[in-house]
Length: 326
Ligand code: HPA
Ligand code: ZN
Figure 1 (tube, rainbow, N blue to C red):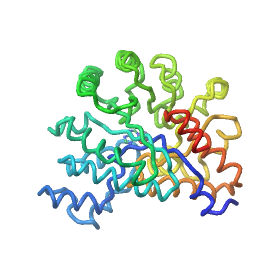
Figure 2 (figure 1 turned 135 degrees about the vertical axis):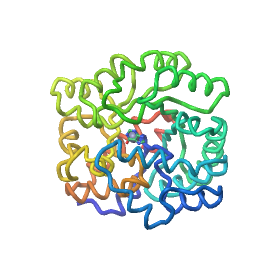
Figure 3 (figure 1 turned 180 degrees about the horizontal axis):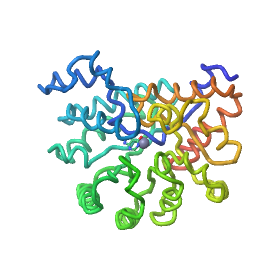
Figure 4 (figure 1 turned 90 degrees about the horizontal axis):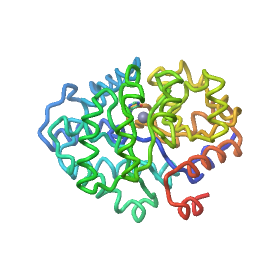
């Protein structure tokens, strides 16, 4: 089995990361105090007791509630810097960071507050942490397409430094077909395209994200293994799947780490990589996800190198940056 220190030093890209999901309980309480906000779970002990999830929605409820502490640009910048420091410690050299603009707008926070705060931290990331970055605006699939289009237009009008768009939040009942116009508009604006699919939703959502939205990448995609024909296509086209093992266990998308389909996905020749999703909620950053899988499946160095290489090759980074990291 590959040594944990060797795993950490492998250069990696993190492609599936929600910045609001990096808010650690300690920072939540610190920001609540700084902003004079009373939380429903006011102590570290009580807050920590909330982190047992039964499915995606039970997590989303806490994730959205905890965002209430993010008020100023400095709050968004502090959260982002804390993530970059921890990502560096996991060997992450390139990070593609999603944020949920609609979730902040719904709380009365100006879009520019979230964008400028996150962007301020990203601006010094290469110099401070050795991590190149890409910002992705993720849209809430349980909201309307009109709402997403409005927010996308506002981001474009303010020249927000976004490279792409994503689609997240409650999956089942909110298929890709709901967002055809959103993805068409984003493509016209020159944005890169990704979407969550096949986390809790069926394999047909993965297929529809490719066929109807034109996505270049699928976030999660684990349920694709249920459809043999779809797997063949994903292998043939080498569609990147940004898999998040600890997230899948904590949200009960899989029963146990031992039952995770990732080894089967690797054997099938799928283009998979390892990501942390919402590391403050799911038990660890990219390094912890690599460690847990390497230990569970007794991975050799070649397997770890393949997955780290996939993450870099599947990123939206410029070719020169990819070459420097590979
Ligand atoms: N799935 C869907 N939506 C999300 C997630 C997730 O894991 N994290 C934040 N929003
Ligand atoms: Zn996610």
